Image (cartoon, rainbow, N blue to C red; front, side, top):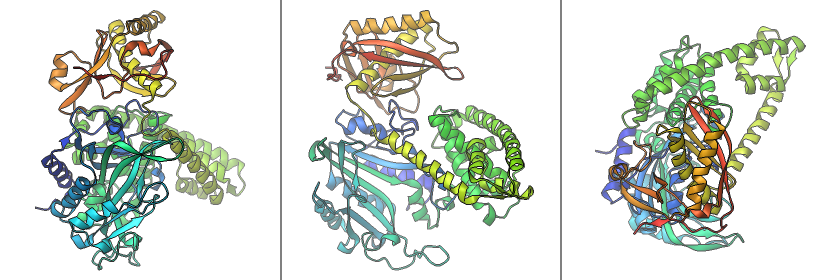
Amino acid sequence: MTPRTTADIRKAYLDFYASKGHAIIPGASLVPENDPTVLFTTAGMHPLVPYLMGQAHPMGKTVCNVQLCVRTQDIDEVGDASHLTMFEMLGRWSMGDYFKEGAITMSYEFMTSVLGIPKEKFAVTCFEGDSDAPRDDESAAIWKKVGVPEERVGFLPKAKNWWGPAGQTGPCGPDTEMFYWVGPTTPDGLRGVDSKPQGNPATHDAEWLEIGNDVLIQYDKQADGSFAPLKQKNLDEGLGLERLACVLQGVGSVYDTDAFRPMLEAVFAKTKKSEADATRDARIIVDHFKAASFIIADGVRPGNVDQGYVLRRLIRRAIRSARKLEIQELGGFSAYMASVVRAQYGDFYTQLETKKSVIEETLNREEEAFMKTLAEGTKHFQKIAEKSSTQIAGIDAFHLYDTYGFPIEMTKEMAAESGKTIDEAGFTKAFEEHQALSRAGAEKKFAGGLADHGGETTKLHTATHLLNAALKKVLGDHVNQKGSNITAERLRFDFNHPDKMTPEQIKKVEDLVNDAIKADAPISYSVMTVDEAKAAGAIGVFGDKYGDKVKVYTMGSFSKEICGGPHVAKTGMLGSFKIQKEESSSSGVRRIKAVVSGGPKEVEVAVEAA
């Protein structure tokens, strides 16, 4: 039976690649571990960068999974037919195993034989070549060999058919993308899905919808701008689950698929507005509370910076939309929507059930706080209105939006009640400048690449293991890692503990880490099952985050911990360790910022134990 529901498509993907010898690995946390370059996991390859760079994955060279991804640059666009804050990425990887032939052959079989996509409605594009790398005739030839007609194979430039590097240098290569025929857009905005397919995306771009791509990582971009062949060639495939469901179910929007429609209906049932008038705000409510539920389940709490700020923005934007729909249950609506999300996704994503209480409590607290903020914003509006003659300045309207969360529509309504208008052009100008700054910040945040595994970050990553072990000795076995963020300059380590550390405790932890460094203990790793890791006494937050096999890093007699790596070969390479700051991160969670200094610039990396 051809899979049609979102759950069936997800299962079919994992089952198909498992039958092809791929290990199924769990999706990573939405909060990247030890990666300062992005706020959230934005792609399935994100957690696998060390293995794409050559480290051995404990589950082998070919793996697949479903990865939750959050992309924040288009939050303000959510509400239309296509934008989502969070989506599910079906991914598979070959890390030094098969390459183009295996990648393309299996992609085509899955698309046509498993999903049942009609061959005449399937097309692909390949890299057209430039001065950096030749045209990818090899991929095109394989597509034709498996059954794609020549007129359905197009060639596009680097802007369309190339991935990476993530930073200025590093792994990169051409990608070959897969498309489904959706036809021309009709005057009423619908797709002519029954029209006869024509050409390919290079000749009829608007009529073909991308449904997946195979990134063929085969080059290493050098500092001088040249492209050298990679020693280890990798495949990274990504298919958007929601987009596939939209295509296979024959609906015009991801919000009309079987996964989203019941959640929308739950919102429509709470408002007296017509579906036509409520659709945009209902989509915002569903998308934002879905993303918020998963983000909270991964340990993030609303705040004013980084992931916490994004979470707060999502929750408050959803509550604003609920107010616009005149939903009368504000005060418990957020928790209600969390239950709607859990009913739809909890079977596969069990964290929604195990973290049910904390998700609902967090949402309720933020909703209550935002209602107070709205009251304060109303007072601020009244002051603005009193000083304005007939028109409220655009910058003042934007301040109400940015600081108090007032949508422009609400400010316009309040202004009209006061017999005033809004300088909408001024608001739009301020809003666009704000968006430009936000996107520039996001690009800067991402500019360092998916992960920095240079010498300094490898040292600091190693130091977090020693720090974790030392904290347990000084504060107690209740201590567990709650988060970690590493740059080339410092480490940041979050851990559960109810009290502020005393100066004596800080000094004792520092001394224990430095004692371990002075011992110059050897560091190595072993691949074992999770049960074996537990039996060996390895530290780890056991649960769904690990696959069947894991890497356990041993640092002399000081530390034994599950981790993906990389780490230095000997503790002495760290030089010396210094805690710069100990502070509160959130309720019951403390944060340490620390540095290492000295030690060699070029470090050896720990290898598997004999």
